[in-house]
Figure 1: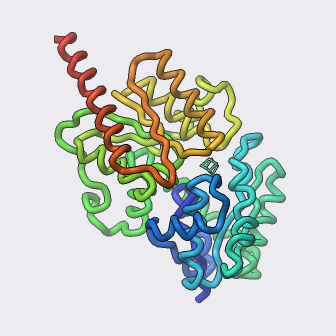
Figure 2 (figure 1 turned 180 degrees about the horizontal axis):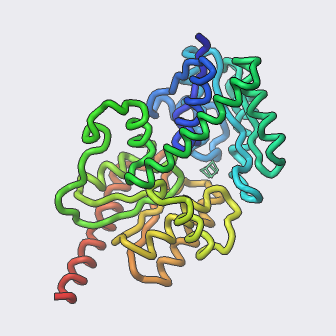
Length: 335
Ligand code: SF4
């Protein structure tokens, strides 16, 4: 059976169930790279110039980890998944960049996704990808319909059950496992409700973020993330703050930040990476909005290759102390 490798980085957290269903429906075995390690980061970094953003360096480390484990590696070039809303330029050139800097890579399977070019071009691109495994266009069509349905179920699972992508992927991959094994019960009493916003490849890669979500939960906080909101909630908050979405990632940064600042949370933590142009603009928009509202506290954490765990924890503890004090003050006033 042909083995297709999927790097556990960048768009993996958004599209893995869709990609896996598509390939498996076509009789292909999917191999995923292991969770990020220092060795993967170092190997990815060694292939590119220093000012490349951290998530791309990590992505390349994941590709290197797959080199001798599969027959080909799937790396899509996703330009746009919504009309006139575009992805960061790093995603557009990802297959070409990988070919250039990792010449020992097995063949790279790419697909150009740009909904602005119309449905016909999109379907042709999907068929070209599927043709590597089946010449039967009907089979490729069936695989893409099943994949899209899996994607919709995945999004619905995250928003309706308030799951993170890794929890939802675990639930889909092992539906027979007890629910408490996949996503532990929330603590009986929570200290505070904290929203963590940012790109999924920063929020859910525990190596990059030093287990941020796990640490917040261990401190008995309820943690909310962008994927726990519906597309409608994200879009309406994006329109409120930014007028109109222009970046694909407006929803998970501006939309999620705006929504959570408006309701239900004590604090919002924006996670971004050093050297990311889109993040610096979007996070600033959320920061200003938080300042105008004054309802919930906001802080941002900037991650980079040399971010020390101790420094990040000190900032996190200071932020949590601030929101706990604020909660206590508000409780006293109400009494
Ligand atoms: S959005 Fe920022 S972090 Fe993500 S790939 Fe682009 S430059 Fe890198």
